[in-house]
Amino acid sequence: MIILIRKHCNLLYFRKHLNQKIKIFITIVPNGTGGGVVKLLEKVGVNYSVITLGEGTGAKFVPNLVADNKKQIIFSFVRESYTDAVKAVLKERFSVSKASNGISFSIPLTSVMGVS
Figure: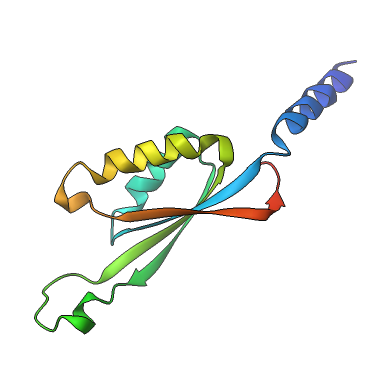
């Protein structure tokens, strides 16, 4: 009997969450700040993020630019119902100071559906 109830609970969970569309949020921040951004996203409900290294192109176009071109690129997979909360958290994070700058945008994944 207990096993049947557990299976029933899991079935209800999957019915509720299975058909939600997923968006990918791509966030670019200065090197060393990606971990903090991921922690903020986890508080909102983002379950999966990947951080990769990147390099800016500013120094190539402005020769005397003394800036660190190293960036971290965060790929976060978000349920469509959480996108407003993620946008609000990132907007607040980027407006704290000039040092907490970054850019973020989202792309809908139209051919992927599932539980995130």
